[in-house]
Image 1 (cartoon, rainbow, N blue to C red):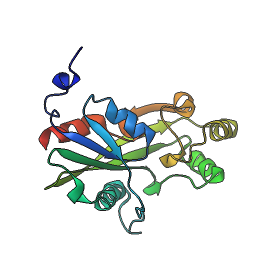
Image 2: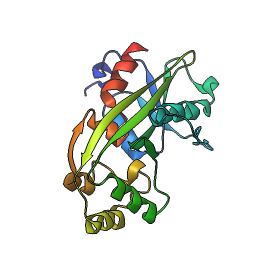
Image 3: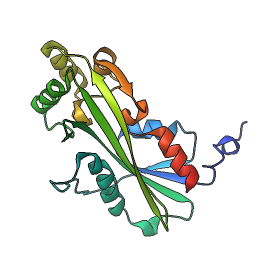
Image 4: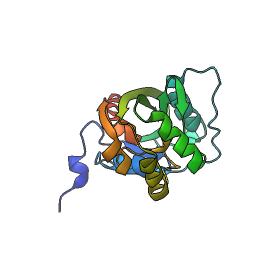
Length: 201
């Protein structure tokens, strides 16, 4: 039998990653790093932010709020708590998760035929330190028809996704003409940047 611990990425070996997220996409992405991880839940996190905060600063700010809702005294010496937040930014404004199907339709019509920016803020926390960073990816959408938008919303129910879409779903296959930056960042976790930061801890 192969000893999986022996082939973990060497700079992550010995760290126990705690992903504080309810996102199945983030769970899948972090699990793909072949390292020791566990999912923990955060409760009652206030995800509001100052109205005058620059849009690109919002996800890192929210990742820190999620960190602060976790009792750091519960962390063991090798634990690394990972908190993250992803937003879509169009024309300097944040598009969060849609409140309902009508809101999702509004968002998809807004990004149709345009380029927007996806920003994920990540905070890594140990017993004695905390490091935050943000990763940006530009996404270009073709012009979407009303029929395409309604089909996607009705079939895929994207209410849990920033900007009302998932790049890894049907709308991404037929609508996205190109990206500039990390693909996995658009899914919710910038794996390359995350791996580098974990090496530095």
